Length: 162
Image (cartoon, rainbow, N blue to C red; front, side, top):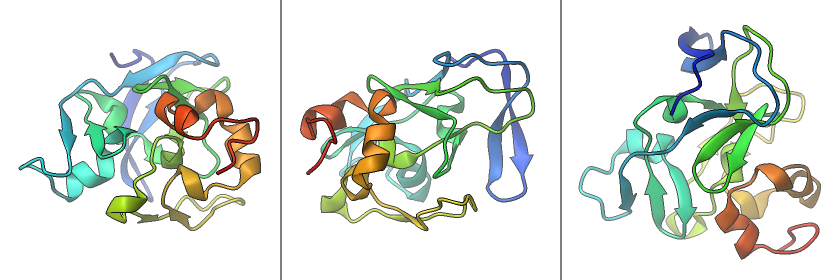
């Protein structure tokens, strides 16, 4: 389910990205990860999978049949994760804005050693994306309503501290 008010366009930094065509209200669903479910032994696992799936439990990820896999990362996101698979707007988004979410809102795969260099260029850029457990407590608190449910269960508590 892709929001009708968004479109995929080329970006200057990340190749392709998802942009608002119309006003999008806070908490509106943008897209869902609704594709195949796989683990690290999936025979089709490649760099494309590694960089575009959403983790929803230890060692398991889900793909998208739509635009969810095309939303880029930012350390200052305007979207987040609800439940396990929905990407929602964290605030009102105006036409022309690129939609971003922080991949650490769903990832915690330290066992598998995944990490990604960040190129978001924001003032608060962390330079590396590597999992929820590495987020500072103040960011975990800020993201509390927009973090994958499996991580909130794994890391309970007011500050989501380890």
